[in-house]
Image 1 (cartoon, rainbow, N blue to C red):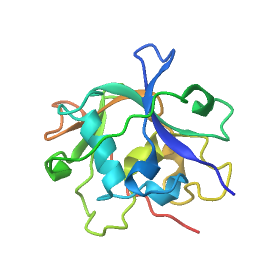
Image 2: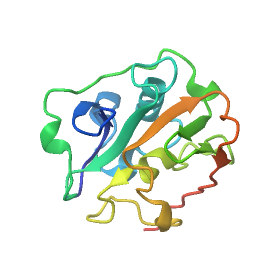
Image 3: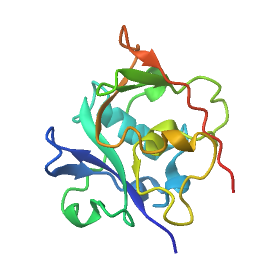
Length: 171
């Protein structure tokens, strides 16, 4: 089997789930490494909703694993948010963490369609508890953005620090 992950939007106080995204709505699997890639439609749908074009701009985000002791899966039954991508998210290349004052540029050396998208890895809660989870470079960064305020932008905010996180999966 394996652990299933879903991106979850939390309220400002982290007290309740506002909504969650279902990878199956974009033909992606639930395991973390089945849907965590640059240029996949599911990731673009999540990015769109975190951009100024979406309903969840500058919201708290966590990629919740169902094996985590703090799993949010049991609290997400009726809030699935299905988003479509009707715009080109390539223009929104900066993923910003407003809580920590940093960002990453998802266009840096991400020419392959199989390149790992840093957002699910950085916000993963419960990674490492099953097969299909991320195991690779920069393990110290996994989950460090969980529950932080995140947005996707066309330009990086001034005075925010660039985070270089070239995740490489190791089987």
